[in-house]
Image (cartoon, rainbow, N blue to C red):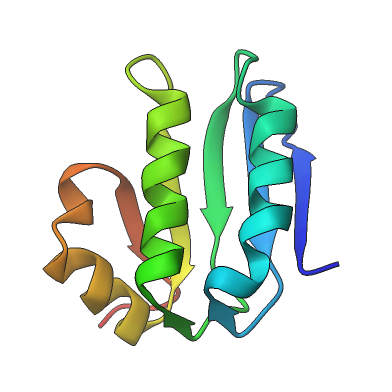
Amino acid sequence: MSVSSKIQADGYTVQISPQNKNFDYQIWDEFMSQLEQYAKGKFNFVVDFTAVQHIDSSGIGLLIKLREHCMPYKTISCTNLTDPVFQRLKASSFDQLFTLSCASKY
C-alpha cells in the first residue's frame, strides 16, 4: 500500500500518509481512492509527507484535487515536509491554499 489513511482522535480530521519517496502519478489512483472515501464527510485533511522526498506536477495535481473536494468548508494541512517539497509548494503559492509545515525548521 503506497497511501494509508486514518481518522485522527478528534473525529473530524483524516490523515492521509503517502508511503512513497515520490509524490507523483504512481500513487494517483490510490490517493484518489482514499480521498473519495472521506471527501463527502465532515472531515478536514492532513497530508503527512514524512516519507516523501520529491513532488512533481502530478503530485501537485493531487493536492489541487484534494482542495477541490474540500473547499470551501474544510481545512487542509501538509505536514512533515522536507525542504525541497516545501520549497516547491511555496514556489507554487500553495502556502496560500494550505497550511504547510516542515519536518524541521529550514
